[in-house]
Image (cartoon, rainbow, N blue to C red; front, top):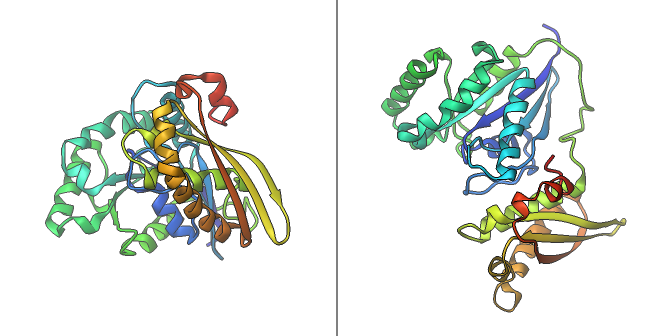
Length: 300
């Protein structure tokens, strides 16, 4: 059998575990992860290379239909990535899919099926460790009846428990065509350090703040000085309201210090160097609805 390669879109509703899965496969923290939905905002390539295959993963924003300019961007990114991929791995959150939320997948899956053969969609139940065996069988039957998937081909994974990840990789390899190595075997992503650092900062905002704050926040690296012994990074954190700025800054700067300290540790691990990180919080009213500003931030 020849070398297998291709582009695999990881799709699903917000908080289904897409970024967590790719990070586990790559064994590297490249993608922002939190327990809050809608962490991912851009399609990001994660590149897995082995002796017999190269799998280029495309992480996508969780699909939803909220009508803001930035949310329209999320939806377009997700649908576009699914259409262009050789294979779509569609994640169903185990617990959520047993509830009424299963119907929220309908619009996205219908959109994918318009241009993608059903055989090129691999349904996977994430967080399967939260289900009893009989619940997993019940869910597989529901997915088969509702979307026409082959019940026997529906996989289950639990990233924290290392359940099903190896089987998923094997199935992806079997499905992909023979092809070239698109990237160097040492590459893990096509994104630059500025982008990855911004993602890690944004992840900490998701981790430490509550309510609407994470969804009204953008991070822009304004200056990156790379020297042998120290990387100096300056970043602007944008919010929409003064009250949001107050929450991110915190009492006597406590929250921004907490965010910065945690982000700096992850960035140091990423770049394998000491890091000086300075964060500035700025208010830009209704930036999530500002098309020009969204383009400036890279949400095109």
